Length: 505
Image (cartoon, rainbow, N blue to C red):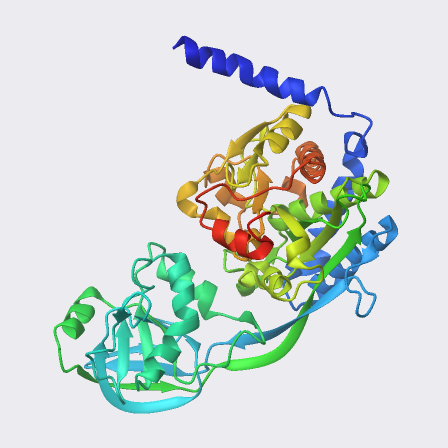
């Protein structure tokens, strides 16, 4: 008991000792709450109509961010055209106007018990067979089609992939299952919906209009989607080794070419010995739009999903850091990158990670700022704590402004893999996300998360100011480290980091 008591006594003293070395004349100690509140009232205003990717409000926000970076003296991020923009080629994708699946005496229709996510127009009368996960992985020795004849048939599978029926497995299946089934000869493939979320929410999220990066992959060659089956229907299908009679019809996905833009600038570091090492600072500036686009409740009185917390909060903190660094640059160089398309599948950060404008091997850290909101204004949150070695810098920055740090709130939500940081982590760059003080997915969080109530009038502007201060100071301390951040031994992204930087990094 004494040992723990001493620990709690010594920890704040240690933070105070670190804090005493911090120069309180730095610009972040002079942030003006009114300036930040003004930015909030613009970025999350009704005028920008929810900043949906591809919509005019998103483009207005992009121009605003670029104008500020230009005013702060940042160099354009895009050397090719000397601009502050990176075009992100996107397709707007909508479900087929008509689609249905019949199995025996049961018929499922698009927009009701069925969603179609990929595939061309098609119509076939064929047997319907069950194919476990419908997954092939030769390295794992797994092939669900090896002893199953699906040629000319409609395939029904379990959701996700072997060993991963959760969110990341679901999205991998979305990318690959159609072509695995097509290669085995199937004419269509549908997964059984089995996630622990209401079907209506899932259908609204993936079954409505969405966007994809145009150069991701070739379109699927057969219809693919999800069906919300009754349990009895699934058992009937599993108990029918020769399948059941069926039909499938789809008028095909509706795909429209369109685009959006990431926005960024570069600030040269103050120390020539490490100025060729770049810290990438990111925040997504898009949100979900208006009305049915938002996926949550709306009414004629308010149908705009303003996105004050998610993620005007992060965008403003990114710009605040950019302004402070322009006044007093840190040792390492800084890339400020506001990304689009996060709400539609982390699309802007994914495109930048695959088409970087600063070499990834020179990008030593990604400090992302994003979150669903806050329910504890005495703290900030660190998503990815203990993984990259930068926790002492975040703790020191928080202590300098009288805040504590909450490490990885709501671990069951897998938040690290749900924000833009994951696209950089997957390629080996040490990365994490800085968020508002969060104790979990509480009633306070859910009152505003992706709701029309998330507007500037509900924001604690004093907390916004301190959030920006802690984020900026933490970023400065990380950029000024004597050594670059690295993945801790055993982290799932450690191997990717060694590949990116070489074993010496």
